[in-house]
Image (cartoon, rainbow, N blue to C red):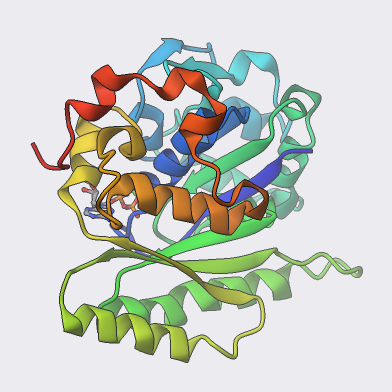
Length: 292
Ligand SMILES: Nc1ncnc2c1ncn2[C@@H]1O[C@H](COP(=O)(O)OP(=O)(O)O)[C@@H](O)[C@H]1O
Ligand SMILES: [Mg+2]
């Protein structure tokens, strides 16, 4: 079975799609077979990378078929090793439809067990920044969730009141008489500004969540950098876009650190070590320096 990672938060604009797409991109460059699943009804992960082959269906068919993923739902992106299930129901009807299904929390978990997905190493699910049935079913399908959090007081407050409440809620709702619990939640500090105030807030956030069961603040911190938006505009994974080896906070290093923390067996291994394809000096080095 693939490892399933869902990006969740009750807040929009914290970096879920950015980090989901870039994690998917770097894992694919490591040679893993990766599937990105866009479970946000506003399809932004769906458009992040160019498509080589667009499948006839996407998320809607998977949900309507009760969590059965057929090959006709899997699109191919221009990145080798990275496939996509696009989001195709912008009107919110999926949320309404899910509400009436008793097995709604299980639908995405069932989808992950579909034979068509068993050759993937990793599935990365992006969700909308709000609470809803789609988000919950995506959360319950995950081995673990990643919740980006911006180091400012408002976001930290929103994280505890919103995202942690959702986690609690899920684990209460999920009581089907036997133990059926969500995976752990990893908070990922994202878009940290380069000033003392932001760094202090990061420390406060770490202290605040130190004693929580099922919640861990990842050691990796993603700084605020123009490269993240610029790479998205160029439809490239950010580690290929900002490859500055001499800058410890370049996207190259940050994305590697994130991978090493999530997949410890890859520690100290760089994508270039495992995948000759990613020596594409054209796309990468010409953009060195991050912001164009
Ligand atoms: N580390 C970062 N540094 C700078 N900008 C970022 C960073 N992460 C995300 N952004 C920008 O923030 C905006 C919101 O990010 P997005 O991934 O769409 O959030 P979400 O999916 O949680 O709504 C985007 O314009 C994105 O480019
Ligand atoms: Mg998003």
